Image (cartoon, rainbow, N blue to C red; front, side):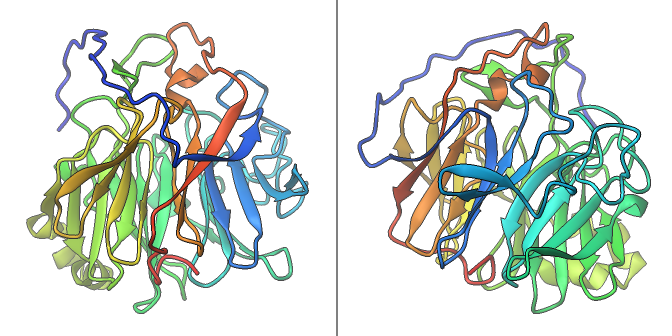
Length: 371
């Protein structure tokens, strides 16, 4: 249950490190980016978040970065959604996350909603689009409209290939979704549970996020990570506070509706994380958590203890992070808290250009997360 509070616009005193010399620029962009993926052979995929006031529809959301240019990926047709006249089933309406999975394919999580806070186009809109990056063709589409609500925000995906399952978060109508990768069948679990909800709005630069109309913005189950041994799924709302559950319970609940109704009894608090833009997990099981209030990256060890990895004033709302095969943590500084959906009056406060940064962390990605 969500508490409805009157929340003042309070700026927190922040102690910022000016610039950390370990942090290097990977990309310079004119459009906010809320996610990148790389492959061991050097390919780079970028997801644009068009929250800067530019007209999103008809412009590419997912691109492959080739010779300094973003090329629509997998092609222009999939990136051609232009409103109600477009086919919701065969175009990308609004992708919230992308990642190269452990199977080597590029997975695109399409919210099915044309704008942040807009109703989801049901049933065709919400879907997972799987692109074979060897052929550059769509290999499969998983429709998930049957486990999505009009108020949903399909957020992100992680995998447990050993059991043939994938897990997704719903940040609009708090829940987890368990997907059987072979059959395409999905179920919704922990729907409305306190562990998948948000008790406070997210915040950035010390200010609570508000809509263009001035209403507090609650972003529910958002970031998620699977431990390298596939034993636990971790997740949290964007406002922070990380939970976990043994994946065995999630996987069994897929076949056992009675267990699904009592899953909350198996949920554990894991770490008191801050308001967060994005996460990543390394091969040792440590989870990297961005802190948009302090422009910092925290490292949460596998036992739940936390430390600050780095702090740099350039890290303005780091969104979905990525660890590559060269032990580098990629950090897209998307400035989402300054974007139109989170600016009273609906005027973008984003300062261009925007940057994707990286830092050497001395450890590679979780082997079950991606190559």
